[in-house]
Length: 422
Image (cartoon, rainbow, N blue to C red):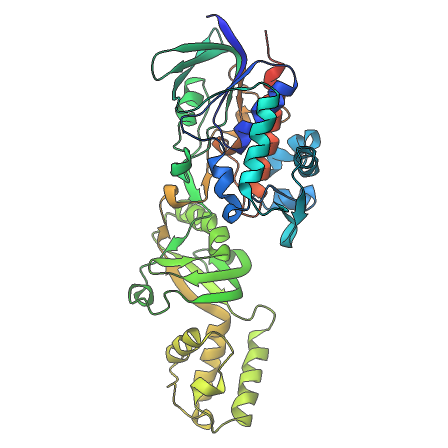
């Protein structure tokens, strides 16, 4: 096939944009193809429209926040790190600021500034762009990548192809799982796909009755329990009860562990535990409550413990402890008070799954990292084929970790695809 380009990048998300820039900087003739009408759609909505471009935590900490095969990225970070991402954007004229937990945002708070800076750099580097164009398949000959065939039948030749099409989450941005069949055709393994960073569902009666719907709990410790009642993981953040179950930052981080527990032990339900006072031992809490009862025994239970936790949650837990809301403090049974303290520390309930993968922020699973060169993102199965971003079996928590992975792997894929010219 006639070689039309040096490098073809498929996908206009963060990893694809970065890959096309990296390849063009090496002097390659680059074509970026995206089936959508606009590039950078996922970037434009990330960080609540402010675009959390990376995270400034030390590399070891970033890896810890990418529980899905984050260790694979150590080699990549040695080539292009989160600090390099910061320098890259600042060199494009995007001033960044650091917020809580190391999250980096543009000073302007506008995600579109980030997208426009990338598109302007592509223009300066003469990257060719074709939007509203669907790739049907990647073409391989004699163990090497030779180009792509478009949906309309056109064939475009290239010495290297970078697959940057994302996973299956947030499909309205174009991530619909297109890359997995192309990878399998090249001999790659695609690990089981599952939703991560996703709300959890529950069929508990209190959820069905919507007793706590819309209620937020601040800085609680939320745990996923194994069948023996031991904690698999705990995240201390905010959460919210919904009409279908639970959501919020702590829940999103716990979600992948629920999915994995269901698969590992073949469970239909997984137990969660909420600890409203993670810094206090249960006995300490009980003694504090007991002292309060002694001091203000004439008050009703609902007023005696007012402000301890949000009012609706307080009433809910009091009733679960067998305490009447109007019962006077000096009439409270000690065993009921103990039960109340226990529930404040260990309110448990079950979840029965997650919302679907298209409702998730991140896709778990993907092209097996065992078959990818960690310093180049090159396929070990097919010459001239590169993968980057969420199509790979790498997934992290929200907070700039997934975008960091996408930009780092995109940078490596693009610059090394440029070196693959024959």
